[in-house]
Image (cartoon, rainbow, N blue to C red; front, side, top):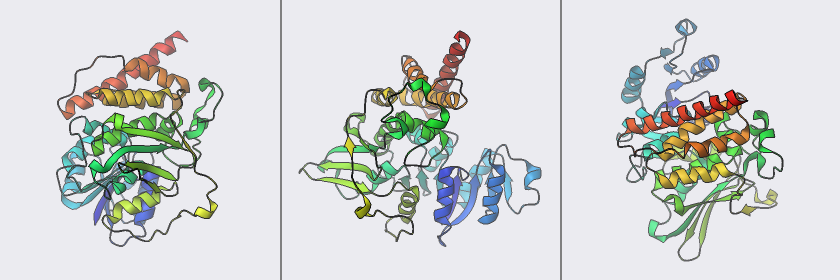
Length: 377
């Protein structure tokens, strides 16, 4: 299969390449990245990739390369529609939302890890997975649900739980404002990109995953609960009407998720780590999420409201996490400012363009609040 990897230089993109390197049935036609242009060239050389997409790419840097540099979105779409059969959306944010939207109704297989893309698309088209076998979630929790929902009928389900590791500060007893970017980026179980790791530290990420599950599977936000599972071995649970429950377990290793996602209708031998139950000392489950993680509940509230509030929340969170990582605001201010932004009144979006406008409004509102706080200090 001929594929493209959007976001190949990020942590997830690197893992996708590691998995595909073991597969002779996949040919990588296009990869994309931004700030890590040297790493992008190394990847292109290692996998003999004919096309690289980087809007900020330097043509002189690629002039002696056999890889074609693409800096234009129209040319990117042309290559993907004409030469590619599957696309990995491994980049965070909404940059490739339009492309995803156009590909949804094609035969292309779409492996999607971007929460923002799923959430914003879900504002217009709910239950994205209904009758769309070409869409495969790459989040470990949603991939687990995707697998289990093949085994049971919807009417047999009583409840659905996503699991959360609790992040770096589940037992934290200090002040939120004392938390530095370095502390927030030290996730105890998973290795991920900076944005999602910060979101995991305050459990905003888990609130977004609740909205994502609603967008993908058609559950209401109220039907999707979250339980803290510190070891990150259980990824999702489903309760059945007859009292039985299903849980999907694996090590906290995205390579296993990727392998399952690309194997489509068959299960293949896993060359990566597997669970050794003899070494598992305990499986701790805690519910509910502690009230100190107010960002989680704010994200759920945005999901319950719907009608553009998830997009507003996503845009604001993007700006606030960037500000925290650049030390413009404190860790605790992320949720405080998110709460203020959700006080806005917005009109429900009627098109994808209006959804994107609401996302930008959330981003800009956050930037305004950040500047206001700077002027006070």
